[in-house]
Image (cartoon, rainbow over all chains, first blue to last red; front, side):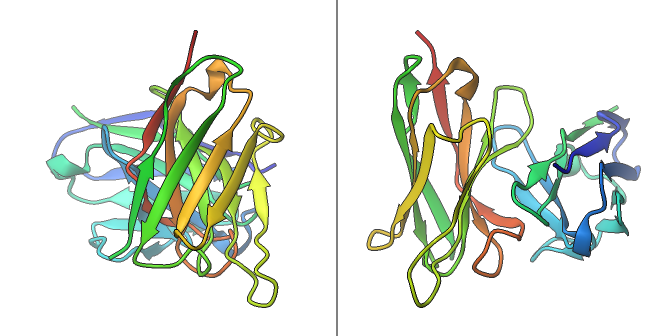
Amino acid sequence: ELVLTQSPGTLSLSPGEGATLSCRASQNVYNNYIAWYQQKPGQAPSLLIYHASTRATGIPDKFSGSGSGTDFTLTITTLAPEDFAVYYCQHYNDSPCAFGQGTKVEIK
Amino acid sequence: DVQLLQSGGGLVQPGGSLRLSCTASGFTLTSRGMGWVRQAPGQGLDWVSSISASATTTNYASTYYADSVKGRFTISRDTSKNTLYLQMNSLRAEDTAVYYCAKYSYGSGTLAPFDYWGQGTLVTVSS
């Protein structure tokens, strides 16, 4: 079973800075079937990126995804107050799908 | 516009049962697969179950379950009501979580990301 490990667990940054979040898979993710979600407190997750690098509808280009194989990255440029949240990666190339444990991006 | 409206949930004793509902609008459950994802208090996201869209010739939908709920939970749908269900039996304390229904973004199977989510409903298993 494919396991996703996200790092770091918490990222403390100031508004205006950039963020780099990592998602490592325990085995190759075929077709780069990796998605990234953002979750704010008390809200459902929302889809940011799929197929490792394709932005979902309405997602600004400050969010970008990259990677292939077992190593994937979510990059957020110029953090705005509304970007401070928890981010999850997910693989969907097999059933069961699975989520990483999340990276919290908090205000420093 | 796509919307997923959840109902059900609440407090139940260990060993008890509960049924969650998720009524969809803006698309039909026969066109897209659906899933349930839960989140224990202060924890991450945990996939629970999924159901594919129907095969056009047989109306048959495939179902999938996490090992932790297999044999206790049942995913189903009523296409006439465009509503997804999760029947939860033999509930345990570790099933306590917010449960979300979610729509697969493309295709008729379950190999896709979730593009729309319900508002979530809290299930608390406690005596």
